[in-house]
Image (cartoon, rainbow, N blue to C red; front, side, top):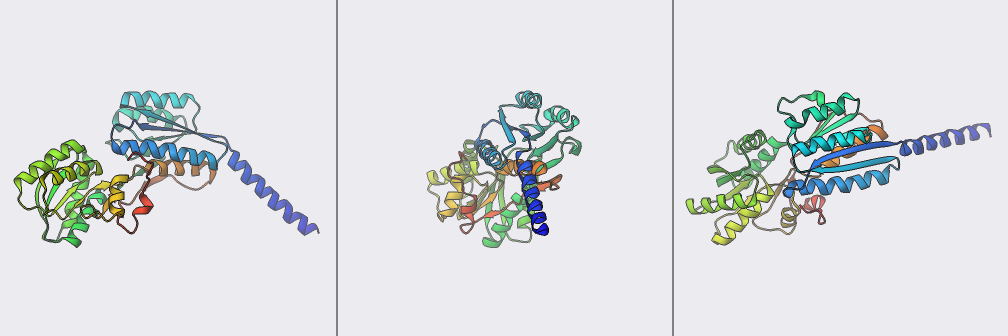
Length: 315
């Protein structure tokens, strides 16, 4: 009887500990850019979605999500979150360098800081405890390897993003992916991660080149403009377009077996949710989460597309 009572006491103590952990009061501030284009609208959607899920899971958790249209506004938002007594900051900077001081102020006060997607140009790791990001070189390499495997003699046109480091990382990855094949790159022009600009670039390509096998554009928004240009020109020589990010429209095309969009490469706006969940785990699950967490550039195919489809997302 004494052993049985002791066992019951141990179980009750463990349950009490679990309840206490769940009720632990923690406030996480989330600072993200306002939805100024497709990908960031997805970031806002997933931040708000995951905030609700985490607060339902942990009754003592409060998650405050703030959006900002520019770096100056975001610096003010970070300061405002700090005055609300946050225990942790999850931030996807609109532009990391102008925000370093605001982030460092929070970190210097002993708060847990998670940086998402965009790091300072000097890669100063002292401003964060955790870094969560997509894999830019792999985004390009995954696309290149798909083309190499499926159309090894393809004539390819490329629509790049902006002339910034992550664009070059993606481009370098693509070149690595097609290495050793007969894939020929006809031209590379910037589409500024904008569907209208990509439409114009694609129109130029269609006028300039009588035969194009494959289009690689780094971004699903640009792919919308590319598809419009192809449709307008009534070109039938193009075998497929491969883009990236994981927008619901492109994922749906993959799911439906669209001939021109057979695959997509993931660079998910939902990474902000990954960052939030890992930050919460630091407080509630007592597991090590500090360091770098780089997501795979998953190739989305008809077989796995349903796992990445969020029909309610704006992106």
